[in-house]
Length: 146
Image 1 (cartoon, rainbow, N blue to C red):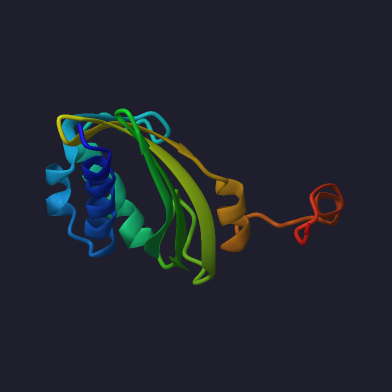
Image 2 (image 1 turned 90 degrees about the vertical axis):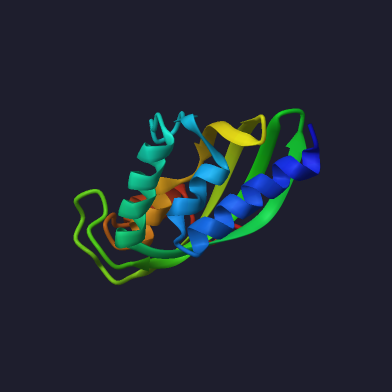
């Protein structure tokens, strides 16, 4: 097992997503892949999920950090884009967003077999104008904490 090879698999998978080449995902993701966050249970479910996201959010993924150890690859990336279509039943707002995401992938035989995501979906929903940041929330959780 090569740690650099495992990181390269993840990099190439994100390149395919950024280029909207979802037909290439089978080169990187196992057919019986499990996503514990989005509750996806196969490569085909991943393709359907990403197709839906692409129709909803015109986005790009920028890898900020990537670390490998054993059969795991940790990735921190920035997701930037615009809300252009229905997103989880929410009408498009045309608003831009930026979200930090951390994914942990497990790789076996040069394929991603499992993952877990850490992100803040409430922040994304606030940025696209679906959730209002109230005065009370501002007092409890100031946006501009340095």
